[in-house]
Amino acid sequence: MTTRDTTVAVFRPDDGRLAAAAELVESLGATPVADPMLEVTATGATPRTDADVVVFTSKTGVDLAADAGFDAGDAVVAAVGDTTAGRLRDRGYAVDVVPAEFTSSGLVAALEDRVDGARVEVARSDHGSPVLLDGLEAAGAFVHETVLYELERPDGSGESAALAATGDLDAACFTSTLTVEHFLDAAAERGVREDAIAGLNDAVVGVIGPPTRETAESHGIAVDAVPDVADFDALATETVEAAAPTYHE
Image (cartoon, rainbow, N blue to C red; front, side, top):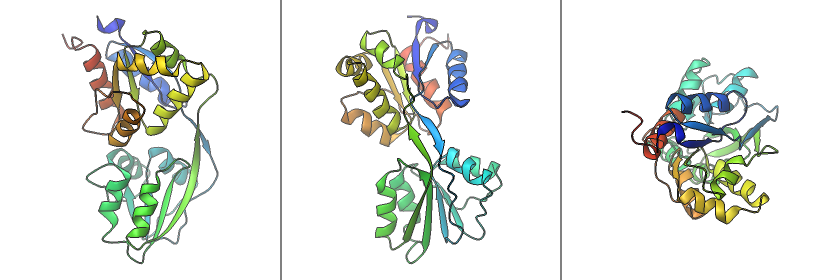
């Protein structure tokens, strides 16, 4: 198979990120299947300003908070990973904590020794893992969650699921637990869930990190690529390389 014959599904929100993801896949020599599995709807809420620690878990959350004029003041600012930390710095915030493991449990491990009795504000989407809240509360924190945005599956999504079901998808780049779940929901809506899973297992599946891998595998989807860095560029590059290893030649 030549790289240009390799079809690669990308699932980013259709707010500029989907087009950028498709462009990246094309630059790697493959053919993108742009299938938005997430739609971001801002709630209009802003993080509390009386917290001792403020936790951000995504670039989207950072942008919404910054656009609303959020002032972190003297609070300790924690980011789930380097990508979120980079966006915080770009928007003028100092970043005090980035865990060694870019997951909710990694954040808990990084913060648990400093939050006993502290007010912790967690600013994120409506689909955040309970692991973060439960872990911080177990460490003695007074936790408050602000839902900055909601994530839903857009109407009409699922082209990639149909292609997987017929064996016409060569690779897929899952960027979150929710993209896996929404892919399967779209497949079920089309009546091809089991065939789509079988198709993915004949293709190359790349995931952004361990939590997404766990979700995929819990649904019977074999995972072939997990980049060392939780970054879409790294995910796409590794997935295309696994699907068509001759693309460097």
